Image 1 (cartoon, rainbow, N blue to C red):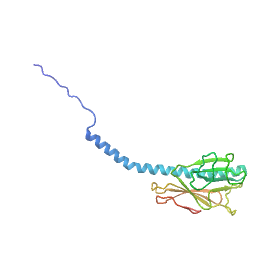
Image 2 (cartoon, rainbow, N blue to C red):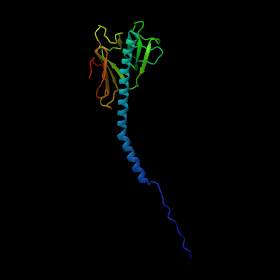
Image 3 (spheres, helix red, strand yellow):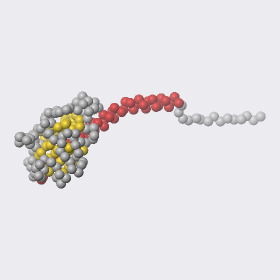
Image 4 (cartoon, one colour):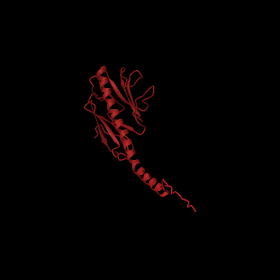
Length: 197
């Protein structure tokens, strides 16, 4: 009598226990990684907004020298609209414009640069900054009393991630612009001073 030969097949794949362990490890890694991703994203948003503000201030200064006339940077709740308005309340960005008619209000023909910020980013201006900064044809910013301007604007996200949730853009000596980090302990300040860290 002939013996029947059974071939032993090799079974490949995962067992149910291996699959459960893999999913548990992936869930643990995601739980640890999500706060880090959130911190990186918020840090990038703040850095981008501060760099854009610095670039806009430098553009305002350069345009005032190049055109030999007043150039203004103002905060705006509607920077991308066809009729942008200057207002520090609920600022969603800022506008750089040549102030040909010297009324500190932009028209579409005067606009040089428009910048919007991420929805999470809040802009808080110091009293000397107010809603706008004006550079004269000498390339310097002056306050309303004809003194060289010293002012700040805080760009902030109300979060504890990152711990340094504020970027201060400081204008000193009329034209020198710098950026400094600050912490609001997870909140944005209601007001800031003219000189910040």
